Image (cartoon, rainbow, N blue to C red; front, side, top):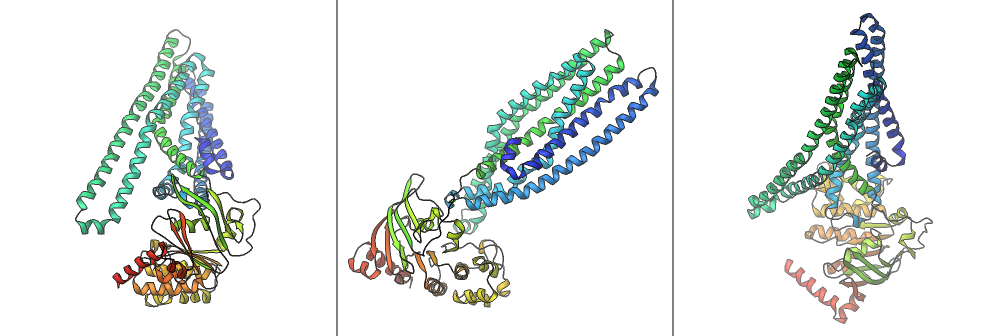
Length: 572
């Protein structure tokens, strides 16, 4: 458990954990030794001269005071270490996620990471602040007391020591028997959370179709699965709780029976026997608490294992000796890229000289967006090479590469802040005049003027308080402010109303001016502004050339444009 915790935290945070563990262990030993002083105290009180107990009572009081101070210091150390490591873990998790390839964030992975970054990290880090101290005390204090009993009478000490292997076996057996149930419960919890989010997000569609009862049935079934998984978890843990109680009570009974036999034989006095039984009772209480602590530790360990799995995911390798691109041209040479068992791009070769504009068109699923992602090195290719400025993107420092590329996505995500804050993400040190100029170029100023709070308007989580066209204008303004020499556009005008589409087209025209551009497009108005067109189908280049030349050939691109024009006429 501690090794897993240290691996998750990393080497930089290992020292405070080791220091806290050492302090908690010392505190548990002090607790056990303070109880050990009950033997001479009770021996003196029940003996012929009760006044002889005063020195032992003073020693007992001093030991309890030392233990109280150590307990305060160790608990405080645990809380401080927990809060510090919690912040450090969030930073480490965030930094690691930022280095992982975009392909790692699959359909179910985002929700998993969201849950993990929420209560998962909190539960994992609660080990240090809330569980490590009680668990150490429950393990070390009884062993210290048993050591004292061995020193007082080896026979009674051995009788008490029998509980140690029994407790260890019961705990190990309980952990194995509940592992599957715990994993199933966690899986059912995630499924139920997904169902709740799905049910809430789909309310407009469900109500329009009169299907709310049916969909709620799916959510209800998921919640029943959680209930059944919880019952199985309790049933699997119950034998361990009973077994632990039986082992502890059996050991206490053995000490009581052996002590009574020795007392009747005159080998130990009544006062000494009473003191030993008090110590044995003090061993029993923390041992019985192990069942509750064990369940909490298993839950925390499960979260730690999930966190460790995320942190051990391999990021994209960084070059040891990075090379700076010589220009702003782009090239794909015999690129093959696979996603799972599917080949998305198959031997694609194309080039975009500096300052030229390339449009990538083709049917859905042809690999158009993937091509843009490879240029930005969101993934690494399986074969071939992607070059920027004549240099393989794998040999370019990631920060240098990103500084040269502005990306405008089809689905724009805005952070829950003001419009100005979201535009400034393009370049944080930009002046107010530069921000305003970028907004004017993207026609975002028209949006700002009609909003009551102007630039201080909050856009909501994901930009939910703005329309799709308004979010796209923010994205273009952000790209204009970045002023990168390479621009990648991914169907930025799809699903926009005519007014926003015209505004976005104007912004895109300004964004493309004088830059190397690769755009995924399906509107012919956008495609005709480019120098060359590449038609992708099934991950391969089917046609390539100037738009007018491809039209004269009457091939796949000509068919594609005819369909696009017909759809535009229908919309009109």
